[in-house]
Image (cartoon, rainbow, N blue to C red; front, side, top):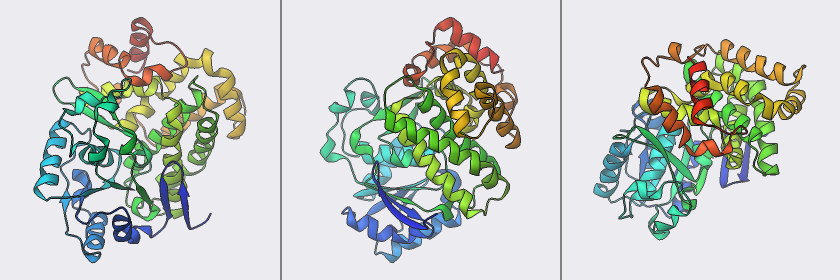
Length: 381
């Protein structure tokens, strides 16, 4: 595989080991003079974040860091980030980390000049047109996990701390101006995070591939993304220093997020409310509910997943794909069900209601109703 390449789909991507060194130049190229680096609490004090701050300083920028981002970021995190951005008189954002850090960073860049509340820009119809697009700050995105692909997304997931509902906030200009995709930054990921984020990428590819919407380009990207994950996730899990596996997983995560412009489905419709109410890791939750959702959708996807099985080198059509998912989860020590994940005493009525209003519902190949969604959710425990 090429060690260093540039791509422009869906946004300019600088991919390759060591390319974090280009951070200062990337900021300058989009006009930043005083960027703010935003990341999550877990990364804020780690050496890779320190290295990024060193590079900022070396390029003549201040060592400006906002690291108060929760696992499931909310509007409280956003308000604190906006205050840090304004107090520091910043003019751009470096979104650094996994999905949580990058999602919240993009929202700071988006909201820094808006006067409406963030919930006015939920991904419903043309709500995004309410925003003043000229006031959105430039964003440089640097993923440190191979999962969400938020670095190539035009939206962020934000939890409403009052209703405990996850909302998708969308605007076309939230797409980062430049992505620096350096697999060396993912080498330090613990096995548990490698597994959870990797299965998030797999869920993106799987749901995009199974979505009934018409988008042949996304369809092809999703299929190849699944192949890359099949061939590399377990290797990255057992040997975190395997730079080839780390590289392929970083590519696959970006592919998954590119592909899901075709749609998501019941996996995400369930995992969003579960994560919001029980603070579970998003990718791991996706992995836990994946087999129940495959059973739920079997009649609608049996032919399509038979084709995917053949492409992935699995023998036996849909059943072989279903069994493979179970074996992969087991090899990554994913909890067997939501109870094992720690979802105790859930309010089923609330989870079902929130699942049915999640935007992912529209991409599921089987229509989701209150009755069948409740049965699906119960089968996950």
